[in-house]
Image 1 (cartoon, rainbow, N blue to C red):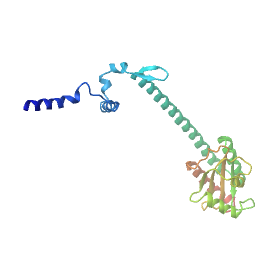
Image 2: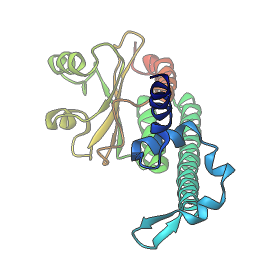
Image 3: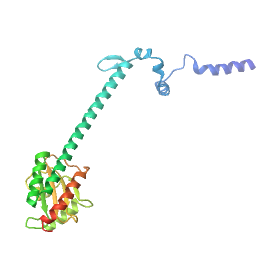
Image 4: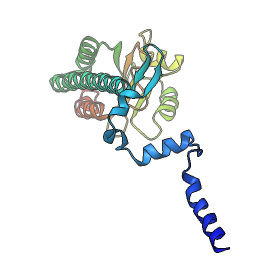
Length: 231
């Protein structure tokens, strides 16, 4: 009985490792994941293992890895070029607004401020128009429209970026193209009016835009405009 019992135990130990045991693809995958150095220890296998390829037929793992690395390098170069292009564009915009603020400080009338805004923003940034719409005076926006517009577009902020209704575009920009706009309220108490900047590109001004440069422009206008407007 003891001999039979011993043979049974031996059979149980050997059985999991016999030649008839079949490994699933999941088993192989799990093994390779747990042993990432396997092919480094057996480099000869890299050339022997062939995988189907749509254009090249069968190729080795080395060739596939090389192709993947080349693709990654191309993708990284493309992203790097994009970042460099964005950085250059941002530098250009920063310089334009810096020059604009200096020029505005030299203006002596609202008309001169209006002309300077148009000249710089239209000529150097290829924007469609830049207008100042006052809240008082002969050319002011009617009071009811002022209130409705500010309540709709300036709820908790002094800035708005995006698209306007046809009526709103007509109110601020007349016949000038205004597929997307940047708007800011003027005056420390939002009492002077609105500066509107428009673009013929519907994607130029978007709600997620940064306000840093426009905040600086707003600060300059809030300094020079009150006296010009008689406040």
